[in-house]
Image (cartoon, rainbow, N blue to C red; front, side):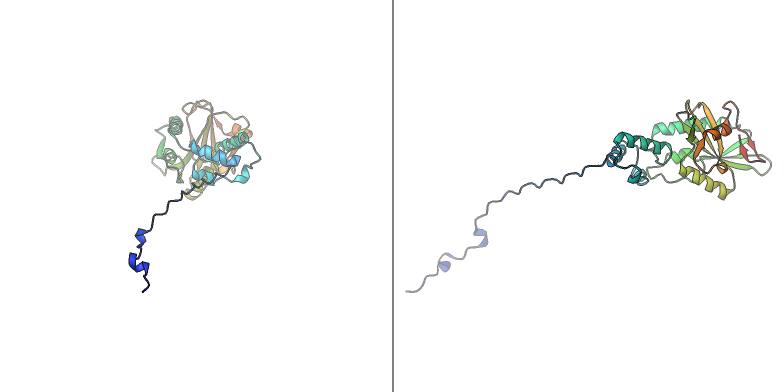
Length: 246
């Protein structure tokens, strides 16, 4: 009797006839734990979240300046000092624009329109740029003086400080001072930093006129403050012979 091959009798089983295997549940993978932030990293993240500094600002800093051994309070104070000194560029907001506008308005009223002509107003444009802070290489204000002859031009950078500083103050950021010196040298016209402190931007308590050519640092000492202070009640005048704004 011949051999019966069951494979022939029942036919070959097709792959689709194979009973489905029960799915084995895949255990959820735990999310990677966030690495704990150092006090400095935590501060930067917090300040960025609040809009106080940008990615561009963060690149200007280095952790070596703020070691992790410092507590957060000390780091905050250090950061505030850097902002005040111009090492950081805080996020521009509507309030700051209004302060800048008010201070420029205060200064412009002290320039007699019959004598001085405003050629450029770059300051507010500089403050209104986006987070990239594209550098404006010209002074906030550019004036000319003189009619009927070759007019004399000069530039003015503006700085208002909310508090008075008896022991000295930072009159501009290092970047502003550097570009003012470049502008003065390349354009061959004098540039002055007109700084004020106290009161309000529209009515400060102290006013200083600082020739850029006179200073190598953006810090003005108490002795220099006495020399550069201007009478708030007097209008601006310009000595063409000595190229001095006073």
